[in-house]
Image (tube, rainbow, N blue to C red; front, side, top):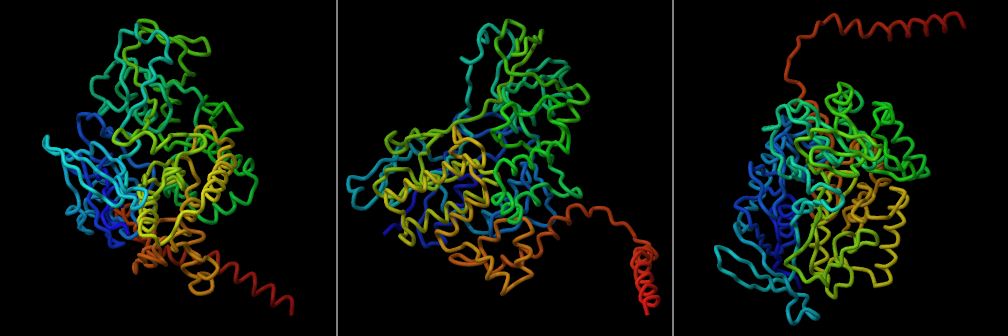
Length: 533
C-alpha cells in the first residue's frame, strides 16, 4: 500500500500533485531546488540552468475560466488573460488556501531516483536529495516527476551552416527578458511558435527591423473571439468537440482553417503552413498581422546559411547587416536523476501509458505529470493526471494487461493521425476534452451527460454548450467539490466583471426603444389574425 510520495518540483504541476496526494490521504514530500514555488511562472531577471525562463511581457494564451484549478476559481476581478505576475498571484492564493507550503522542501535538489532492492515486490524508490551540500537518501512508496518541459533549450546550431562565423549576437529566446539593448538593431528570430512571435511583436517597437523566420508556417488565433470574448470559451466546448469528432477529420481541420483565415488571410501574409495535409497546432497572438501589415515584422522562410553579417534564406533572399539572432527553437526534457532504462523517450510511438506511466515498468509507482502538449490548458490536464496517478498508487484503479496497454497505445497513435494528420513526432499532443474524459472515466469523475440532462437541465446546458472548464471534473465522484455547480453557473459573471471598469448611466428611455421591434411584430401578428377572421 502506497503511503509516502516524493514529488519533484514545486511548479504548477507539483502543487497540483501535492494537493491530489493530500486528498487521497497520502503523505507527500515535495522537493524544490529553487527558493520558492511557482516554477515557470515565477519571473526572474536572470536565467538559471535547469529552470524554465519567461520574458517580462508574457501573458497567458488561455483565459482564466479555462485554465484555473478545478476547485479554486480565479477572483472575479482578475483579467481574462493574465500577465505572468497576476497568474503567480493566483498560484500563491491557491497554495495558501490549501496549505500546501508545509509539504515543500526548498533549496533541495533531487540527485538520484532509483528502484529499491525490493522494488519488484513493493514498488518502492530510493530518493537521494541534496540541501546545502548535504546529501540524504530516503525511501518513498511512489514518485511523481513534475519538473516541467521548458527548462532545457534546444539550440540546433549545427543546422545553420556558417553561424559560427556570424559576428553578431546569437542567443536562445530563454535569455530574453525585456526589449532592452535592441534599439536600432536588425534582429532575426528563428522559430514561429508562441514565444518567437510574442518576442517579435514586442521587439519590433524598438528594433529598426525584425525578421521572423519559419520553416513550416503557422496558424494564428487572436485572443479575442466572438463578441470580443476570449476565443477559447467557444472552442474549448463539448458541443464543438462532439461536432469535430463526428465530422471527417479533414472537414474539421478545413473549418478551423477557414475560421482562422476569416480573421486574416494567412496565405496573403505568407505564414500559411506549407504541408496542408498536416495539422500544425495554432499559436495565440493578435498583434502579428498588424505588425506584418505595418512592415515592422518581415516574414522569411527558413535559413540556409549565415555569413559574418548576413542570413541567406531558402527562397534565395538575403538579409544583410544583422545584429542579433534569437533562436526560438523550443525546448526538450530529460530526467538526469533517473536510469535511462526507466523512460525510453519516443515522440512517435510514445513512452508513457496515458501519457503518465512509463511503459514496461514492473510496478506503476512513478508518474510523470504535465509532459504533454494538449490543445488546451496544460495546467488543468496536469491536475487531473495527478488525481489519476494518486488513485492508481492506492490501487483504486488498475492498469490493463500488457496487451491492453498495447491496444491503448495503438489507439492513441490512430487518434493523433486523425486529429493532426500524422503521428510523427507528436506523442505529447492530444485533444484536450477527449483526453480529460478518458482520464476522468478511469477514476469515476466523468460526467454522465444524459443523466445530467434529465436531473439538472440548466447545468447540462451550461456543460454542453458553454466552456469546458475544470469544474466539470469536480461535479461527481471522488474528491467531488460542493461548489462546482455554482462555479459553472456563475462563470460568466467572472468573465464580465474585469471588463466592467467604467460605469455608464443608462438612459431609461432606451429600455422602451429596445421593445419597439417586439411591439411592432406583435402588432403585425394581431393585424394578421384580425384580417384572417
